[in-house]
View 1 (tube, helix red, strand yellow):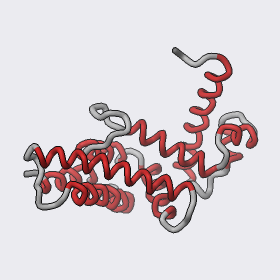
View 2 (cartoon, helix red, strand yellow; view 1 turned 90 degrees about the horizontal axis):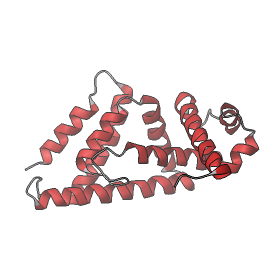
View 3 (tube, rainbow, N blue to C red; view 1 turned 60 degrees about the vertical axis):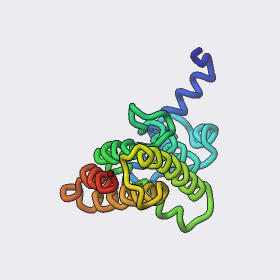
View 4 (cartoon, one colour; view 1 turned 90 degrees about the vertical axis):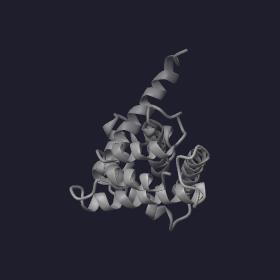
Length: 191
């Protein structure tokens, strides 16, 4: 059943805010984007926007959560990551330099501060590593992947490589093919 009335309008406005926030964060970066500017982009006052999101940090984290939900590849369950899904995500990211750059900066900055962003990124890494390790473990049982390393070690190396490749690609977009390098790394772990 579809939401009705003011609830549906509220959900639609929330989606509009997230779209505008993503665009602003990608174009200007987190620090140079104001809540007032996002509110203006969607025809709200700053107080009106804060009715939907209590502060800029929570808005940014919801943008990231939404992006994660939307970026799960078609052959994966929503919210579940896999080895080949990681490659797919890296490939999708190669068309989103602004968002990748923002994600890299915010994840690195969150390592040095307490707060919502740090908890978000810690939780996200744990979730992604758990999912990919479970997929690696399945692949190991089926004889598709080496067993010299634990599933968790391989998952950690794959995620670290994906993150590192994003930085290399941001610095040299023409010289770094993130997708091919991730495929090569996965192939190195295959039996």
